[in-house]
Image (cartoon, rainbow, N blue to C red; front, top):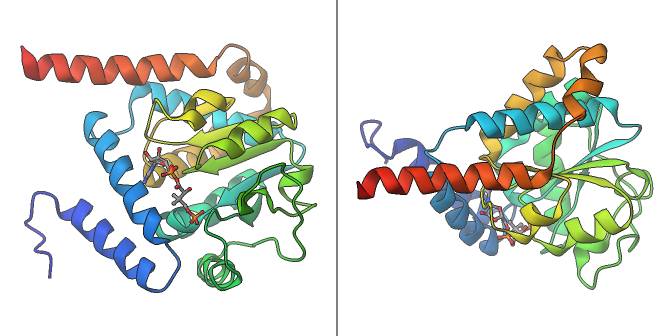
Length: 243
Ligand code: PTJ
């Protein structure tokens, strides 16, 4: 049992939860190592949403609200960590939710879908095809989901799919704690924040933003500014320790 008084209580409980989800196949074993990498960057980012991340989350909300066909792509880690939060974001943004896995098996698709549905998410079902030109199973998606989407939110992406989706002309919002990852550098809008903080923030902004505000929110941003901000934040934090 993890004592509530432990200084790293939240982190330990999250790890325990992910380990349990790995035993049931919701999270892949590789997903556990991916989480560890995320935790390391979260440490460097102060384990809190930076002002820059909050600005990205507001822009993400505006992109989803103004989309013709917004889609949220969910993998094992995201479902395990944020199923309830995804239900709230789906409702606030009117997005379609599609399960898309790197380590794809039909069993994992089923158990992740069931977990999401238990928390109130409406999950797109039916046939998938290799609509995304990739050599691995993340290329499999639904015609009425990602294939038809104009804006796609991809939490904890594994890299090359963001690039393929951009080439298909889509606007890609990534949630990824690693400011140097290929996903972060390739996507349209990197949200450099922890997924369980980022999704509720985007949901809150979806509820707060008015239609009139959207053009202004979307008028002036580049993905690289959020990468610079995160790296600068980490640099200052390290400098404080060294001084
Ligand atoms: O469930 P599957 O089969 O689709 O597999 C999912 C994983 C996560 C294994 C797969 O997508 C993968 O291998 O991802 P990567 O390439 O390790 O990338 C995941 C990125 O997410 C890394 O840059 C991590 O820093 C980041 N990350 C990990 N945990 C979090 C996170 N970002 C935000 N919040 C987190 N909790």
